[in-house]
Image (cartoon, rainbow, N blue to C red; front, top):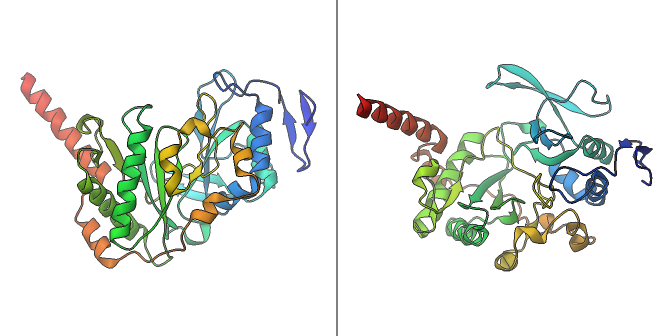
Length: 322
């Protein structure tokens, strides 16, 4: 990839403008994105394969935006799947990033972040993982997110489950818990709520399940809403942030020794060498305990509860002004 304007790759993808800055504040060119994604293609594709994909793109002079529906100029060799989107009341044609050629085509489109669904197209009603997203109150709160991740790990162990952990590539941490194909979306969502609530109870001064930011009091938000049709940034995916950090797998016993800036599209591939630590760390799929599902069904869905609470507070403010 020696040219600066247009050139062919070994995967028969025409690259353009490789020497341009990736985006303001990235500190790297578009070429670096392409080369990074090519270097980890086998590992990231294993996380994306057969999962409807949303990407975050950055085009020159514009703010980052999420793309779900593939553009009209998408090559015919990019696999897609049509899915009904209830929120927008339309069919969305999602890409399936199942091969290197598709991944590099996305890279040339300045697709920086890769957010697959938690279910594959052959069983969209069966999630493959539970996900706990640990979101600290500020960008400087990564250590607090790590502490919350250890709480989640303890809560999982108490019910006989195990998970793998990675940096989100932003300010937080993700815990993934692989589950068997017997669990429905509803059961998985209930179990995720129960685990989040258990982690909160282990140290309520450090962790909270409060969905409304005003109620978190500077604590780490244990987000249990990555369920159903939600997406989560894939392991090894870059993030559209200054320095272009990468969502990177970390061994549990090394989690306290890292910061997100340790893993960028410049440094991550070198640290991986020939390994795939995300696959190595991931436990085998597990059966969700029935009592955990029952426990979770008694916990209100955070987003719905927050919506009703927000409306109640708005009414109270209006009534107070009368």
